[in-house]
Length: 213
Image (cartoon, rainbow, N blue to C red; front, side):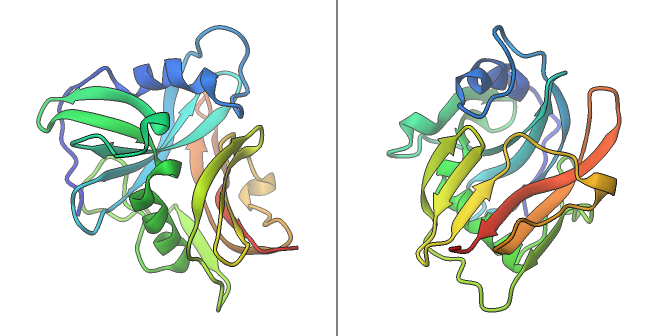
């Protein structure tokens, strides 16, 4: 179980994302730094208790972005390209924050969530499941061996052993009437809510596993 500490972070997560987000091919804003606000999200537990896993949703007046982050007490070997930044945590000390799409611990736990083997956890409270995050998985779906995350203008894709694709919906799209519509060929998904800059609550897809067409 992840323990949520009430403490300081320097720089803050949003401060890190303000400089990092515009470098992503899926960023929908214009020139200049985004004016970000926390808009929602959830956490997953690392079974080994070493890595913090947070699916942070950050919004500006242009869009809401899904940013899975992992927090580590030491650099992740081979993941220099995925480093979002380094923070000083008031309790845990120095923490390296990574784009979770490139962290095998986050990928494994996201797939476990899709398969129903773990529960999403509240973003701000220890040991409280987040019932607003929903998931599905087709019986017999092969959700293994997803590697080599690639950013595109549409999001981030990871290729699976069976030829399926795990797609992270980076720019979130509100579902009509709050009911996400699964794309054809979807073998599993995660969806949930977030808040817009005006406080409006929306719901949409966070991640989908798509089989070979």
